[in-house]
Image (cartoon, rainbow, N blue to C red):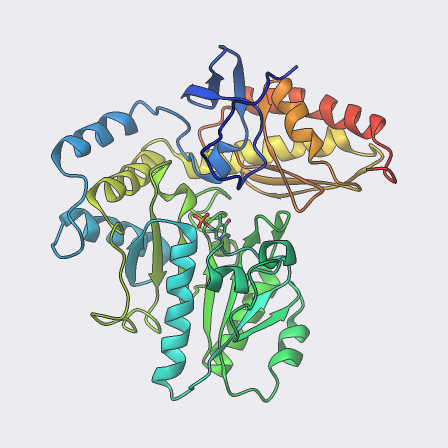
Length: 403
Ligand SMILES: *Cc1c(COP(=O)(O)O)cnc(C)c1O
C-alpha cells in the first residue's frame, strides 16, 4: 500500500499527484520520506538527464552558486556565449536565445515566426501545428497544442494556427493551398505528451522541402525529445535535416530550469533589442547547468549509451509484451519509449509506484518511459522486471470495456 497523500492545503490543486513524498535521490533512484526506494523511469519528465545528485554536476553547480547566480541580461556573462556555442556546434544552427522553460522557448519560437511574417509584409501570419501536439500551457502555446483537454476553459484560443495530422504530407498541402499567410510549420520530432508518436524521417524530409519551397520556417520542438535522449543530440537529426528554429528545455539543465531557442540563418537575426526578453533567462546558474550537462554527457559517452540502453530496454519490453492481449505497440527511440495499451491505464502509475517504479501515463493509454540517460543496463533490466508484471496484472484485472 502507498501511504496517505500528504496534505497540501496551500498549494494550488493543479496536478493529480502520486501519493508519495520524496526526500532525496542518487543516480536513477529516489527515496521517499519513509525510506522506501524507487527506480526512476520518469526522470522528472525527461528532465534529469544525469539522474539525481550526479557527482560531477553537483560540485560544479555548488561552485557557481557561490560565485554568481543571477545578474539579469543587462550585463554580459561568458557562460552565455559558451553554452550558445556548444548548442550551435551540436545543432548546425547559428544563434541562441536563453529562457527558463519549455513553454517560454516555444513562445519565443512563435514570436519569431510572426516576426518573420511581418518582416515579409504578412500582417496576419499563420502557423501549421499538429493534432496531439503539446507545446506548453501559456495562452499561445496551449493554442498551438493539439489537445482539447489542455485548452478547455481557457478560450478564446489565439488565432493564426492551422492544424494537421502528423505524418501526412498531403494534409499540409491541402490545408495551406493558396494561403499566402502561412509562415511556419511547428512540430515535435517525437510527440511526447501526445503519446510518444515519432514523426517519420521521410515525413520530416518532406516537410523540410515544403518549407524551402514556400519560404516557411521549419520549427522543431525538441523540448522533450532533444538533448541526447534518442541517441543523437536532437531527434530530428535522425532524418538528416536542419530546422530553422529549435526550442529546447527539459533535459538541457539536468534539473536546473533552463530553456533555449536555437535558430538557423533564416531566423537568427529576427529579434533585435526590445523585441524579446526574459528576466531569469540565461542566468549564470542555469547556463552552468547546461554547459556541465553537455560536458559530462560527452565525457561519459551518454549519446551512444542512451541509444544502446534504450534499444535494450525497448527490445526487452517488445519481446516480453509480444502477444500480450491489450498491448498495442511498444515504440520510441533511445530512452524515449511509449507502450500503448488498448485501454486507459492511468491506474498503472500508482501500481508501479507501489512496486517501486516511477513512470507516467500520457494520452490516456500510453505508458511513457523517459529515464535519466545514465540508466545502466542492469537498471533497464530492472525496469522491465518491475513493469511487465504490473502491466499484465493490470490488463488481467481491468476489462477493456470497463476501463
Ligand atoms: C514539456 C514540454 C513543453 C513545455 O515545457 P514547460 O517547461 O513545462 O513549459 C513544450 N513542448 C514539449 C514538446 C514538451 O514536452
